[in-house]
Image (cartoon, rainbow, N blue to C red):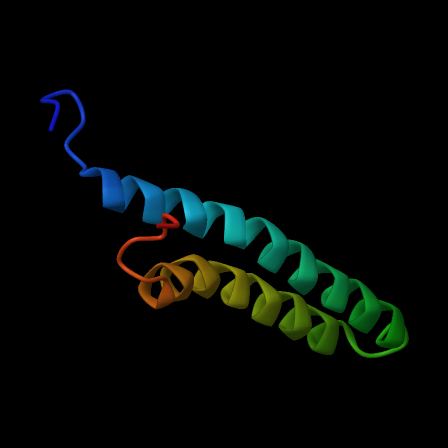
Length: 77
């Protein structure tokens, strides 16, 4: 382990995979919210706000959940 890099290789791979997975997860959530926003166009502002807030909270929860669900070594053997 290099003194300049405090993380081991497996942790770096898991972090990288977590960020890569978040790219598609974030796009999927954004597309669902876009469709919901169009369906809720005539809904109250509170309903639209809560929908967007739920999407943001879900996006914030995706990286930690993905990190915990990934196997210890994400590298193919």
